[in-house]
Length: 475
Image 1 (cartoon, helix red, strand yellow):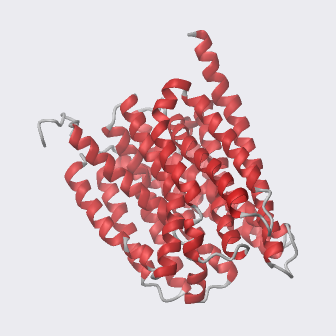
Image 2: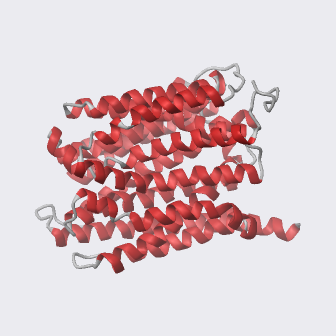
Image 3: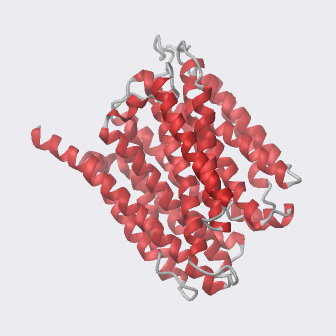
């Protein structure tokens, strides 16, 4: 331990903080990229491993559902067993699963590996945010660190699309997963060198809560996807939706009675914090339509190759990188709440603009320009949302609160995609899916995404902006 470290084991030197921040941001960036890197490579994956159209959607869902469903357990494990230990464990599982995905020879092999990779991410992700809170004091220092963290979340989604198209077109979709091996090993070595272990807390893991929440969310998403394909009258879809709701209801009941729940319900005592969680789910639910369906539009309607489709996302990637770096200064000047509301307004405008697409929409005026607005929104919203979700949380709940941030992020995207798949299917007949029909369906999903963002904006104005304004008036 260096002289710069305190009795808590945290390195407060400038070099130590920068190293910690670099490792945390790089690890979280790797997680987020892996959510989207497969999207532009999906046609190549389908052709190479002979996926059915329905089975192909689970390349994404197998990852995000295990990721989101087990996040709270991963966060609780970090509190009990030590966050550095769980960070390295999660990173090791994630890295080995990435190697297995790259070597996959069948759909079952790939889906199983994606599920394991999601488990690794569920352990790793809450540790990143909790370690960030541990190593950076609340105030400008933590705000700056969270801005970089948010930049990783915002840029990672779009950067994954670009990288996925690049490797799928020039090399192989497998390369996008193989590159995680050297990066993961380097990050594990860096964590052992620079991270201080947090004290272990006595406690038990809430396995019942973890299982019921994961199965409940999975059943809900499966029911939505099944209904999109077979109709709402399908018995399997109805049973799956009913089972999902029942399991989630039992999860909440269990959390209210468990001695050491993975989701302490006291986290929802703050209306502003609860609004931040709900807003994040709606925000990701709306934005997932942009990531998933714009890719289909670019390749299926405009006829772009995977690499060209990936590069076509640059108008959203660049603002996604630049804007989060400006968030700390803008938050000091305008306040976190007003910055959050302004970002959502910009996002609503961009998504509504994008919803006007047709088979004849020019890329530069009809796609690239609204992409810029969406990139500004993503870069400007995620940081303030994260700050609102962890503000005022006791240190004993830091892991659970950070885990809940990531749960809202991942499960919001999964549920949002399930809803938008239903909208996509309902927007046209199943007999034809040419460029005209595909463009019409994609436009319908963007309209639904706009509605989700509008609801999120209303929640922010009522439960976050208004209380902040009242506090300023009293002060």
